Length: 440
View 1 (cartoon, helix red, strand yellow):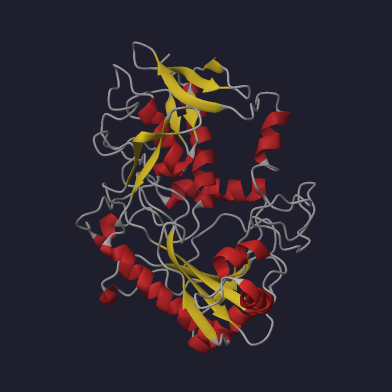
View 2 (tube, one colour; view 1 turned 90 degrees about the vertical axis):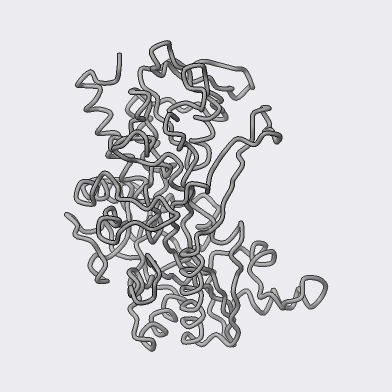
């Protein structure tokens, strides 16, 4: 993640491209804290874009998988560098959890070994053990209440039985991602906040970004068995910062992967000319499942104000509340970046030996993941929703701590940045509470 770009590169017309109000140096201790508390496997210093760090990864990288070997060989042919991919999966026993058994069911499944370092098996149980954290499962927050002074007083929610409850609080922290966080604020409109809670700027829900990218597939004559073991073991960062002569802002990284179950592969992973019915379909599944590898690029997605999350005026959810409505159109720079990285994906697959290569279209499924930027961070209350402590400008005891605070989308997976921001926000909330600065 680059936190200071506009100051170096200038404004970009038609976008909200801007600097973050914090720097990497300020966030680095919290990146490290996240890596060590959750358990991340990796190897620092393997590519020239690695930032300075105060500690190494707590665990060595995971073993290289078959498609990682293909990626290394292909990258070498092309003059690129394939490095071990940092993963939130244990390469060795850590804090009472077992190492990865390489079963291959990471995507969409829980881990029997607890080797996946998700919050479900790391920080949430640790928080509960303190005796100061209570989990209320199957609950659904519908509104944040405020008093006459404009201070948050708590949350109205439906409990697991569908009953409406009110939980009072001295401070409210919302961590519902780039879609549900702005939705909740907009649903919490009141006479004090007619545009939605904490929305005096009018920017709640605006500047939606995705973890952009390009996705391509390759079919090999021989078996590559990408389904065995962790899905990603090598990543290429040669194009993290593109040559300015290309006229494209940003860059990104490429990993090779296979993260489809058989049914997922049947519905989404086959090449476009494969039969979709009958014996030909079955034969394609049998032949292609063990002979396919994918290349996924993670790239810059620019913040555009008209790309937004809003309340649908007609569609309701199960609770009778307005559903999320997404309005999104890629910026021209995003489309040019997509094309550049799609060409690199196809080039990599060809160098790896794929006899057939195909593109996945840029649509609502690929690669639209990791919703970011809809309650952006900044120092100017007229141009942002939260300050550098994740506190909303309008409500002094309301904090938004998730990907919605992103100012720019980055050039890779944003999960560790979200976690680092959460640790930093926790420290900031503690400081403000001790200073009596929460408005009570």
